[in-house]
Image 1 (cartoon, rainbow, N blue to C red):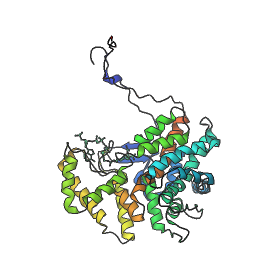
Image 2 (cartoon, rainbow, N blue to C red; image 1 turned 180 degrees about the vertical axis):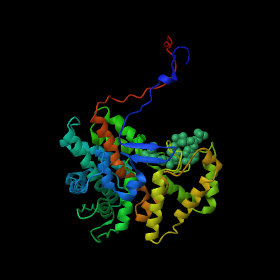
Image 3 (cartoon, rainbow, N blue to C red; image 1 turned 60 degrees about the vertical axis):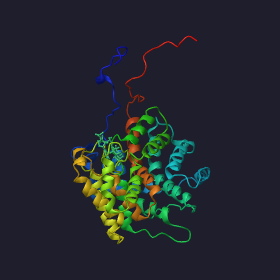
Image 4 (cartoon, protein in one colour; image 1 turned 120 degrees about the vertical axis):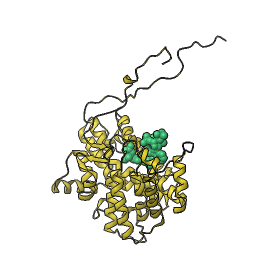
Length: 389
Ligand code: SDX
């Protein structure tokens, strides 16, 4: 305080909110969705059941699951006119740039579900986004490669359908390996929600002004893009490629510890987890499973990642700072093994996180809320007169 403004830091309000959706215990490395542990869900449930859980608070019965899955899978096609949106983008745009634009523009298209005070509209929008995000994501990939869009199929699972739309061409039908489909489903599930992270808080803040849900989700996609957040999976792969050989690992660990070097170990550390990110454990096991299946268990990047993790976890700096692998450390290796290009990794994260963003938006809009207005601590100039000329 400069004597003019006095403030008690205790009164500086921090943006916080109540929620029943996800609980994280950063010290224990625990993540619960509506009370279910993430590793339990990954082992015994699937992505669409987790979407249902996040939206409605309970896991679906077999009958509820069938009807939810049928409804989602029978709305995966996008209106033919949305194909035109793409032609305003350069083919070499970053896929996340196209996703931001595309999802935001859906509010210029789906006029019939924009009344946020109408519960039915909120429901339709939630389902539309979960149904159509895989189709839009696959279209973004196809457009960037100059290939024709592939229409969704209703006879495949949600994750299998995504891989089919990504890799099929008119010349050759992509045969979806069910094991890769299940791995893709698990990657989506592990990204489904994560409490008040930067992108979810962005969705809530945008929603608190009464903005329509498509605009709020587009804002969340923009926030996710940064390398400190969802862009980390792409940054991990680029880092592993840059390390190039196990013999170079120590040099990069030293850079990560050097306070004068802005380099950080991508895929390591977390604002909340001061223990192993429980999602990273499942992701690591899934990575081993996929690479074994594909017969590339000796993939050089995986060997570098494993050695890097081992050295970092035994390093006093990382131990003292409580830095552990996070959800992004192994996800990129799985996606690369499935055949997904690095520039699509954060789009996959956005696809997986969509039910979480929508659940938080619906939870807020469905209750009483006020516009978000984070307080600031003013540290600028005190009042002063303009000099007389
Ligand atoms: C996600 O919030 C969420 O929940 C996000 C997410 C989700 O699901 O939505 O979990 C997804 O974003 C995971 C994080 C992905 N990002 C990365 O992997 C990028 C690399 N990680 C860092 O940039 C960093 O760890 C953050 C951004 C994730 C967290 O940054 P913080 O909050 O500044 O980390 P911290 O307070 O725990 O840092 C403690 C110390 C700091 O040093 P000091 O200031 O105490 O001297 O550890 C250092 C940091 O400089 N540190 C690192 C480091 N991460 C933190 N040093 C080297 N390498 C790192 N990766």
